[in-house]
Image (cartoon, rainbow, N blue to C red; front, side, top):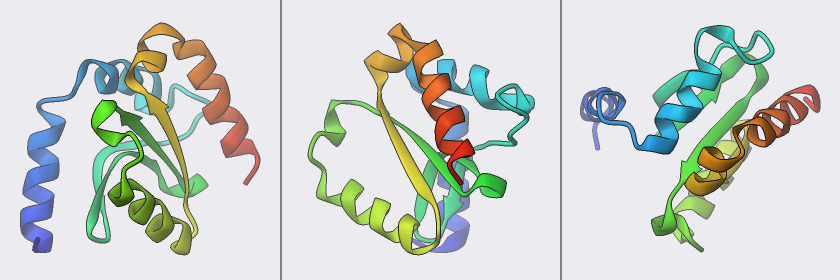
Amino acid sequence: MTEDRLRKFAKAMRHDPTEAEYVLWQLLRARRLGGMKFKRQEPLGPYICDFVCHERLLIVEADGSQHMRSKRDADRDRYFEMKGYRTLRFWNEVIQENIDGVAEQIIQAAAGR
């Protein structure tokens, strides 16, 4: 996918978030979590990150059942790791049922860098 098409696709995805992505965005937007600036549906190389904080080199992904044991996700995570990023993955159900726990894990991961 060309960079221009990737950006257009990311923009379209920002306008149609899953329920879990919406909940997570309410936590991460406007530096609400630990003063960190997150962007959503952000292209990074050949992939689109659900949420990325470039200053902390941290990526947060909201995963549904289609991501279970996904080789593509493993390849993405390795690519991001080679670029210096750490990827946190949360199941959609966990985001919706325990957003405080998700927030704590994100803060801990960001502090570990």
